[in-house]
Length: 582
Image (cartoon, rainbow, N blue to C red; front, side):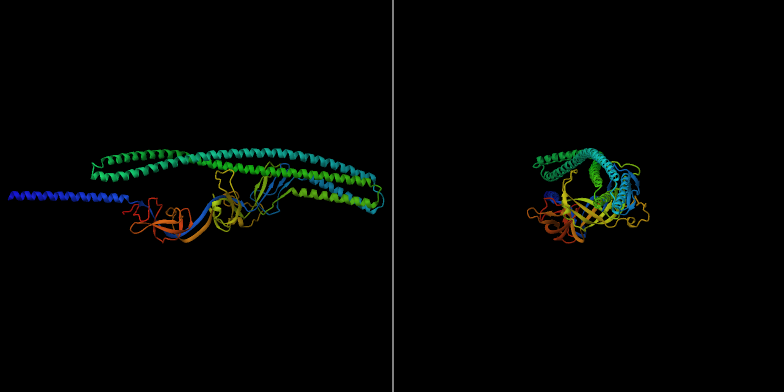
């Protein structure tokens, strides 16, 4: 009996142990299965729809300009006698800035005034006497007129030669400026190409690492899944397990190789990017400088040619006038013996001609007083008393207290601009912000001839509405200088942030969360409910910025959405938040 009981007890104990082992195996398998299922739930990053200020703006760099400007080109042929102002000095419209040498015109004017006085005396004599005019006096006037004609023809020949010399010299200057611009543009293209190459190499290395890491993640997920199967049935899943393990090891080696390649590319990028960017910046500055030089050369050539051409025209008019004077003098001499009335008429004509010459010479003398055409500040003074100006020398007066920022806006941004829009202007180097408004939008879109950016650009003017206070106050002395260290100056670079739209209580989500449905173009987001289920939710959108999009309908304040969902996310899919437990 005792033996039978031992046998029965032993049999029950074996069953209990077997049952316990079976329960443990089932529990372990269930845990592994749950972990495998959980690993299949995609992990996402969530963002929250919230209300707040939403500003749509565009920021573009431009140059400070004066609203009005007076430019006086100085001729190398006209000596400067005196300079009455200096750079930085405030002047009023009509103020004399510098005086040119007009001594030759003054000498001629004095001679013409003497001739006029004699002509008037002769007219008085003829009018008051019936005697004939002295023949010797008449032919003496002819001799003087012949001398004047010779002098006028000589001046005309000199002016003609000067015109030819100026044209040849300025043509050479413009050609040299064009060559310099071509060289600067070539250097810019080379520097930009080198910079682009460094950035492309770094981007390629980052892309390769990202691809290797994705491959590793895929191999790791596959390995984990196969290992669960292998642990439950090593015989059946042996080949799949070792293949997955080898694939995981290879993926890990690929990641390390990509990391090394990226580190090498990063080192090359870090060591060369500063100098490459500086080279591009220097090349851009060189192109701008060459463009300015070419523009100045072309402007100077046009101004010089116009001045020289005008001198030829003036000399030609002087020859005609001298010929007319001579003709009148000969006619007057031939009229000796004619009636007194005819002599009086001839003498009156002579007086009228002399008055015309006096007016012409007076105008030429007045032109020697170089005057400001606007109220403003002298920003450039190339004239030096006692010296002849050089090629390209000029006097510039910029209108004070009224400043603009000139910017070139791409056609994609320009369609959103309108006159009167608010602008925040930041002048580089001053550490100051100024208020401004869009005051002028160009009617022509042009492509740059020098930049690699070939998008059509529209020129836009921004009016600065609150320039520095010390610019607005009056000036007690003609020689007072504007503070050169703090105030806005023409030519400064400035960033203009144009506020296109500004809403203070707009419901918004991150830009990456909003998707566009293929075919319909409808906007939607994936919201996540309390059960961590993704729901495709259609929305209507408003203004967009670089980071956020306004939601007009479809979402509520505080609702959670998936940020930047990939193509594997579908409506009704279970998801889990990155860093969360579910």
